[in-house]
Image (cartoon, rainbow, N blue to C red; front, side, top):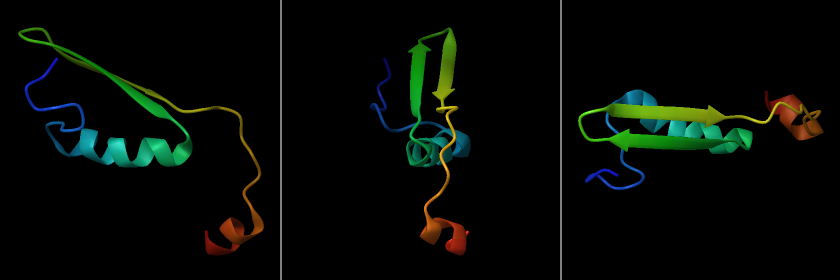
Length: 59
C-alpha cells in the first residue's frame, strides 16, 4: 500500500505505462512494500486482431 494513492506513481515510466497499457486491452499490477521496493507487472493480450479499416488508414 502507498500513501500516494492507487493511480499516482513516481517517475515518468509508470505514468506513461498507466496511460498506454489500457489502450492495448492490457492491465497493470503493482505491489509496493515499505522498505522492500515496488514490483510492477504489465499484462498485454497476445491474441492479435486485424485492425479496422479506419485504423489502417490513420496509422
